[in-house]
Image (cartoon, rainbow, N blue to C red; front, top):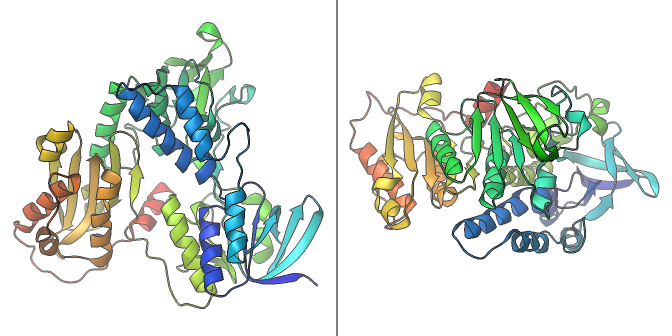
Length: 474
């Protein structure tokens, strides 16, 4: 007889692990499947190694004796990959098993309602579940429209974050968070780096002031930035000293020993057998309902669920599915999803920009402050800004954006304010420590509170920012 679980999870990344641990605490039996590393991309090839390398690059850029070899060794120690090319995921497995989950290494595939087939080294086994969670994450997108790309082995985030030797030169295709972070890392360690952005600014989904601050910082670090263009052809080994020549749509040619692809992420959904439970795949991916359900008894969490791709969102959604599958009548709240880029300076944001607020019919205004003119800017020699967007009718926060020291932490006050619809006058009456980045936010709340209120202060539903941006992306 097939083994039966309350919850079977396909994918043991951040979303899957979060769901497994909480489901066990709630008393559910859990089977969790992964074909690769338990822990997913974040600990080994994404969030953690990239942030460690950014930290090392900042020390090196300050003039300290911190060479690449030391940065590489520290990274390897942190991702449990010392003296080996493959990280050790034993810690994640041990934690899951200690929680009471059954760990299964293999490729999971749905085989009709409530049934999952798992292909392992020992063969294929069938397991049954009252609920199934698809939490397979995403992989770097490999574009097929770039002529000649198939003749080389381009880097993805995996190769970039685990490199043990510096490339002689680097071309980064894509200027989202991965592209800008890794550009800064390698440029600060002396690698000639070209960053190619298809949009008219780097990190284009962020606030324009965040993009401007980031672009200026990257240029100071020596990154050559080309915006409004994309790669059309790769001529393998035809550049100076055997580098690759990359032809751009604007007619320019750039050269790099390595090419890093950072142009997007794709969920590996095709092998999952979703059609056996009535799920039809299209170019827009999956379409979960308000409880992250994609079919009866089948849920999705993490990157494939949308509306944005963040580790913290994946954990939140994974835990939400565990609660729903255990019988709780709850729904995820996607109105206040923070995002951050861990460059120097950091950038962060939550909610709507002024233009987005106006597009959604909100009568809004903006307050902004150049960080360099504040006490924090003076003592830290910091550049950047803090900006808030206020809904005139409700006199509550609609959005907030920061570029500067500690932006990723400082944004959390705004996240909570948007989620709880905290009135601006309450935020203005809150004491903020001096001299800090969040103190600059506090000053903006005071400025906003002094503005005359709108014609009425009626309740209005908050815009689901994540859903709105997902719709715009389509």
